[in-house]
Image (cartoon, rainbow, N blue to C red; front, side, top):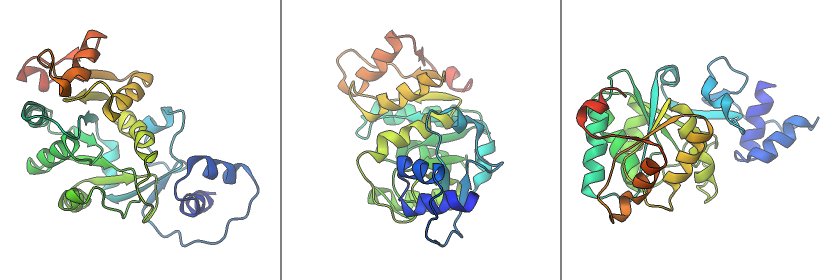
Length: 244
């Protein structure tokens, strides 16, 4: 069954519904080379946190060190176009976190890249969850970062090989980022963004959401302020970061 799961994931390029359909049926899948770095939902290494999801991934393709999945983790997310304040707060939070905490983010431009980069610069552990094939570097601006995480951290994807980045992959990918962290930290967010979608996933999983506050009227922080007004934990000084 394990090989069938991997075969289905490769054949259908990670399409969740098609994989589920193939596994429910007696369909005999064409033989596909399955010697890939992968953790299936049947494996003992599969994170229990992902099994809490409504749609837990059938397969996690990976590059790097899968043992990081066994460490305490927090999700750190934010805007792809942050201001200097959001960038600085992200760096301070990563620096202030406990050294054994893994920083989980989405390897996108902006806050994601800053969080990963700072973790690596400090010799900390980090996991990048991507929305395309595990061998696909996207965006290309993060090529060097992708390779650094591959060597010193962990890259995860439910999409095999060179599956292209498709628009719907990214909001679906966000559920994994939310689930892997015991807490979800937001350092920059507009009112309508993928960041807010990830927060919704975190709330559905009963994860604590922590936010950096912003001055009134600053668009790149309106999402943070809204979340704080709705009950998210507000981060007010550096001593708060050491509690993460």
